[in-house]
Image (cartoon, rainbow, N blue to C red; front, side, top):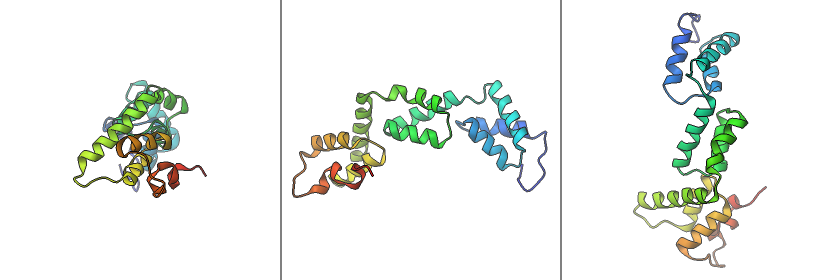
Length: 174
């Protein structure tokens, strides 16, 4: 189905079925897909609702799968929450998906895994600042970053304020 051609009504259910089976999809993503294909909004909602009724779309399950995926990739809970919101999941589904990830020990474990993974991937000695940037880019709390870096490198020296996560720009709230 091309957006430049008229939409063949008979092709819509098969096309959306293929789309939702090709990956973890949300209701919002399926609606966007159909709209990009030129399907009228009213028809798109009906087709997506039919997919949900058939069990082909389940936002709650999709949010959990994405949250688990990003947790395994080493993202902090807040970063995962934002990624789920970007995918237009309902706030209730987001909160349910991240609830198991909220424990501070789980957050720390994920941060430690990121540090260990990053250390294994490179042959050069990793700097404190680089590791702080990696952890910050994954949404970890500056206090947790500082604590883990202090364990790895010892305490930051006063002569190098940039060695501390709290002293860098990503450690401040604006």
